[in-house]
Length: 265
Image 1 (cartoon, rainbow, N blue to C red):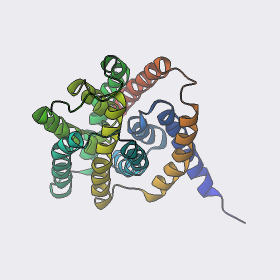
Image 2 (image 1 turned 90 degrees about the horizontal axis):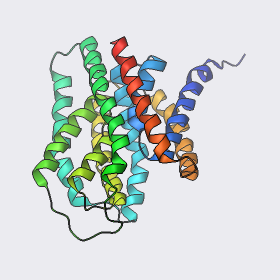
Image 3 (image 1 turned 45 degrees about the vertical axis):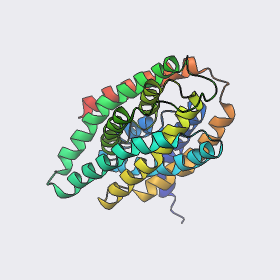
Image 4 (image 1 turned 90 degrees about the vertical axis):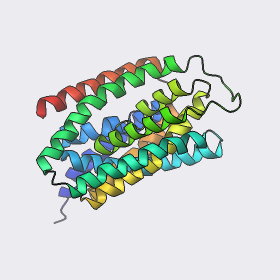
């Protein structure tokens, strides 16, 4: 008799991947912020495995989006380099601390949960606030923008630590802070720049967690099989559901996820 027990395990994960991918396609935000708490709370995945797997998942799914934005000239590469100058070293340092300091698995899981409890409401607030930051942004490029080097690098450090610990921050938080730092960048370049920076950051974080044994490859494949069709469907349906409705729903969902994680910590 053929054993279909694998389907009972993988199909719910694929469905979750499809649902998250659909929301990402509809709104362009919410991937990591939704996926990681969902894996921890609903599927019982250990926090460090949920973070490591989600980081590799994000690096794969964001690569295609980054390339499309690059071809369309929607990426401000000097801003990407400033962010990466802070985020990649910070991520590497945090991964080294995880690898070489005697951090117990239970303690690491606790800190990841607490990091998510803080990061998820901030991400929810950023999802709601982003349209207000871009109301006055120009529709087209107005030439070079002021570099804002130090604030950008420092924000990169914060992002590197936050994303490596929780897998949250490279989307909604990143693009909203960029909108505050660079108000003269058009919205399409803000999004393209944020996605382009997220690729090396999530890849470094994901590979680091892979080296630490915090990546489940079967889980990763199941999420990709579900989310890629979900993203494509969501992108086709984008505009049918108004963002003024979807964004508050996402924000409330993230706050509830933080509350659920706090109660389980």
